[in-house]
Each structure stands twice: as C-alpha cells, then as structure tokens.
Amino acid sequence: MARKSGHISILQFDEQLISRLRVSTSAKGLEILKHDVRRGSWSATDEGLSSAVRDFAKEVRLSEDRVFTVLPRHAMTARILLLPSHDAREIESMVRLSVEEYVPYPEHELVLDQAVLQRFADGQSRVLAVFAHRDIVEDHVRVLRASGIEPEQILVSTACLASAAILARGSADERFALIHLASGGVEVLILHGNRLEYGRGVATVQDWGEATQPGSEALEELAAELRATLSAHRREVEDASPIERVYMCSEWLDSAGVATALSDFSGVECVPARFAATLVSRGNELLTGLPLASLGAALNAQERTPIAITLVPESLELVRKRSAVKRTALRLGGGILAFVLCLAALYGQAAIQRANYIAELQSRIAEAEPVALSVEAKRKKLIRLQQHLDRRGSALELLARLTELSPVSGLNIMRFTFAYGEGLTITGRAESLTLVDALAEALREAGRNDVPQFSRAGLGPYKAETEQNQPVIQYEITIPFATQESSEPGAQPAAGEDELP
Image (cartoon, rainbow, N blue to C red; front, side, top):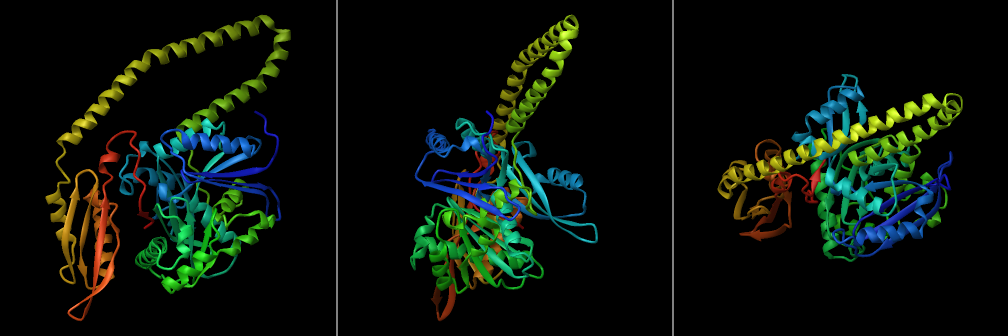
C-alpha cells in the first residue's frame, strides 16, 4: 500500500497502554502533529492486545505514516561493555561471540544490536549492547502484522531516552539521573554531560499515578529503585560523583506530582524533564506527559541521534528482502517488457526457464522440510532429556554456594526458601544495607560465572529496626530462576530486573 504522507508515527504498546506520537520532519526540531494515548487492560495471550492495537491503528490511520516502534528496557537485557576496538565490525563480532557471558541464552535465540558510546585514545570503546530474546521481538512483530503494520525499525527505550536527553541538554556537564515511568516498568539512566554512564530497567505492576501519594507502595518502590541504581552506579563507575538532580518523564503521566513526592520521600532533588521541550519546534501543547522515549525515537527516525539501537528479527528481515525483490522485479519488468517487444521469443524462453527453476527450488524445499522438522523434534527431545539428567542447582548446592558468598560478619541468614523451578528467597538481618547490596552483587557475579540460578538476584523489601540499642536492617533478597525458561526452545523469558554493568 502506498503511503499518503511523509509523517512519522512512533508507536508503543503493551497490555496497559497504547500510544502514538505523530511528528513532521523539520530542520528546526520536531513538529508535533498529534499525541494519542489509550489506557486499558488487554491480554496478550487471547488476542485482546492484537485486537486493541488493530482498532487503534485503524482509528488513527496509522497506515498512512512511516511507523517506528519502541520496546521497553525492562523486557530485555542491556550491558555497557569496554571492548578493545574502534572498528564497528570487530565490536559486533566481540559482542556476538561473548553473548552467553551476559545472558543465559545462546546467540541464535536472541536479537541483538550495539552502539559505540565513547572511543578512547588507547584503542578501547565503551559500547551499549542490547540482548532481546527472539520470542519477545517476534511477538511484538506478530501484533503489528495482525494490525497490518510493518515497522521500519524496532527501537529500544534506553537509546531513545539517552539520545533525547543528550540532544536536549546540549553541552551541559551535569551528572544527573533520568527516570522513565513506563507502563509495566521503570527505567533509570545516569548520564554525565553527553555520556550515558549507567542504566537499569525493572518490570513492575505498579501504577505510577499512585506514586503521588505519600507512603504509597508505588512511591516506596520507585525510591528503592532509585537508591539501588545510584548505589550500583557508584560501584560500577570509577569517578562516580554524586548526581546533582533527578529528572522524570513518562509517555502518559504528568510526572510533576510524582517528582515532588519522590523529592520529599528520598531527599534527592527531583523535577520533571521539561528540557524535552527544546526538542520540539511546534506542538508542545499537544503532548500528554513528557514522552521523552517517543521524542528520542522520532529523532532516531530522522537519523539525528547519537545512540542508535535497532532490533530487527529474522522474520521481518525476510519480509523486507521479499519486498525488495518484489520492487526490484517490478522495476526490471518495465525494461524487460520493452525488450520483449523486440525479442519476444527470447523473453518467453527466459521466463519458462525461470519458472522451471523456481519450481525446482520449491520442490527441493518441500523435500528438505520433513527432515528439518524431524531434526528439530529430536533436538527438543535431547533438551528435555538433558533437563531430566542435570542434577545441578539443588537446594543444598545453592545453599552451600550462598554460604560461601556471604560476608564473614555483619550479616546473618535467617531463612532460605527454595521453590523448585521458580526461585528462592533469602531473609535475614544485617548491620547495614551496604552488606546486603554486596551480597546481592556477589550472587549476581556468581550467576554470571558458575551459578546461573543466581543471575537475577535482587534486593527485595527491607526494614530498619533496633536490637539491643543497635540499628539492624531486616532484608530480603529474591532470586527468580531463568534456567528452566532458557533451556526450552521458544520459551518466553521472564520479565524482571537486570542491570547494565
């Protein structure tokens, strides 16, 4: 279908939110034409989400525009890596060869991309690498296809947010945190001037609209995630000085009230990310909230962003190749038709030969298909057999490794709760939250090295108490398991916390 406009639409959707930012290209900045937001509750398993997106696309006439979509950070894994090369191809090869060091999936189960953040004089580069499980991206594309939409690019919120913040703030050298209140999760980035230093994305069921209420669970969780991010940033970045300010943005929510509540609760200055207005040349009044991710995606669509990450699954690449072949064939058709008028006999012979060759290829594909299906079935049986035979990861083994990783003093473990195939919970008391953070980080490090079950260790609820006139932290560390999911081909990865190191 031929497009009727040159406008750009940035589409985001999940089970609670569908949004579309429509912009017009302009050398002066983004010209906002419309910002449509729909909130609701749709199921992704019974086609409810597909139906909602289809109706939304028809209502806003999405097919008339160039469509770009954005996947949230909390649905995937991202890492900031230091690699010994400036060459883009070498960096891509390094990321692909070392993929299993960062995620519990083989490379063929992932859709990944990377972008160079900074190049150093010694030949090293800081690289943002994004690893998305293929099923997540394919499900995203499936919903779009059901709505008759073929996106030009599938972007990642981290790159969009960081790019928008860098472009909007220009040469400002402030070290600041940027909180993105997403539907279904929260993302926290830390930037220093025009450099992305750290990031963290966490899936959650909280309604951030409730975070304006003092003492609400949503506000407490948001403050906990901010503290965890700042603590991890201080550990990971050598010259990490304290952040000067926290900015907040959201695709659908007026973040001013949340910023005020978070400032009062955390003691850190929090303000809405109103610098986003500098990216817009016209139409600021049409925006709902501060949709920094959509604005960054719109800039990416115009190839104006310093950080570009694109996730294109194999199925979408195949469709594009077919479309390119079709367009090429149509262009060649005109020349061939003119040639046919002069040499009809030769053209007929060439057409017959081409048809025979296509038929031969289709015949070979039909012959190879049963063998391929048989091999795939045997592979699945072998995986299931391996799962039955693998006795690693028992409760006693995990408890023993936990004991090795625990600090010698200052922290005790009162309860170790193990749920087979689901996860485990560690509760106890410690002299300080730093000891708890150190234990959680040690568990995640062990998860990256020798105990994959610990890879998703994260700090849960904690509470300060007093015992014998001494301050004590009552803590909880939760560790959801991902091993069962990653070992089964086609399994959906569980959404949850994961960090950029």
